Image (cartoon, rainbow, N blue to C red; front, side, top):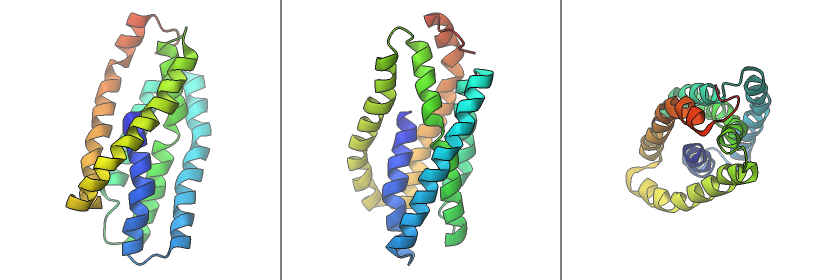
Length: 178
């Protein structure tokens, strides 16, 4: 989830700068960010339904993260129109996994569901916000495109770590952890 918040915060903070440098004014940038967030939030209904129906939250998160990777990698291509479409698609893949991540944490900590939710909603987003400070400095040095592409390591690591979720869930005795 930390990697999700790193990208969410990075994209909503750095892409307006990138698009502004490309000559897009602030009102259209605001509309782009609205579409990024609104369509991503709406897609949460789909991921929530899929998780409730199939009880495979870790696979939903893995697939969503994997689908976001090409969008994020190619987001800095010369065509600004395609870049905007890729940003919105990245939001559609990244944002809706947050509720699924909360359910995964609650499965792992069934007697501490409030704590599990707090870890996802509070601690992860807070740590990602703090991390944004050194990432901003790094973006100044290497550029926004290099930073976003470098951050993709977090998503790849998250995808890899989720392969261990069934083992961890089985060890903790979590119900419906398939």
